[in-house]
Length: 316
Image (cartoon, rainbow, N blue to C red; front, side, top):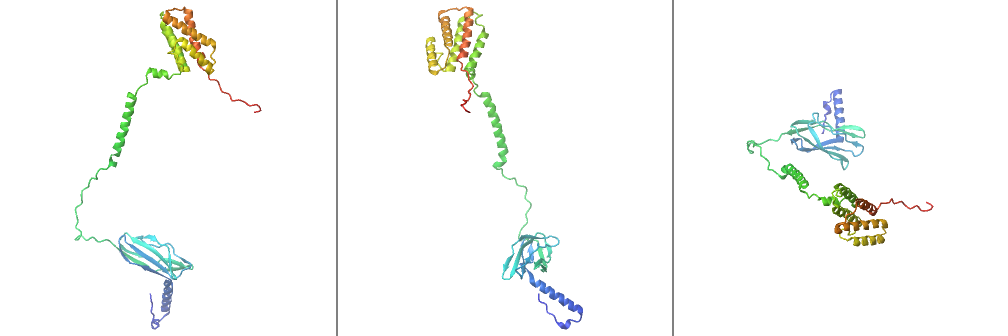
């Protein structure tokens, strides 16, 4: 901005004041100036706006001042750059409203003094549509999107959950149920033997004079208990074989089965053999004695779990 004055036209003090103001403005604006690549854009296009300061020290750029209607936006504020003895501050601006917008002067502080830039007018135009080159078409109807796998996911998970429920129900209906023998086999030998003795008493075979079936079942209870508890083939052994095996097992394993218990077992098995094979008929008090001996044998052959106490060493 260059001002040329002819002193011949200065005729009053008012003219002197005007000249002083113009010279002061020229000196102020000479410190800062603006550059803009274009002042006319279309909606959405960007402008590069620069503030150039002829100083490099003690320069501050306050926040960029937009137009009063806020129609111009700052896309990006770049870091200031130095070139020779100048500082350059760049801004990328745009607008999405057509019209004529005025950017006010921007403040720049140089050594704590305020300097102003020139105001800038930006013209924003709409994008013209050439209807002659670009023919217009009727609005198309709504088109259905093709189905994809994700559209069926809810149905897939629903069917899968239904099949799982059906499979679970069928499993519980048709699964192989354990037989009575398998259920009874899971009962501990001692508990099962006691249970069978109670069941035998409930059958009342003695009152029905069924002595042989009574002794067959009584000895089967004892033999089954020995086989399951001590893992000795008691069911397939004769009386002599069983007594020999259990005696050897008692001596080698240190079971400490009392001789009295072994004697009761031998008498019970021998008496049962006489009933089964010799058609012997013991008296009622003898039958009761054999019944009690069977329970005593089971109790004695069942190992008792002793509480294990830690050893206490002397001095501790």
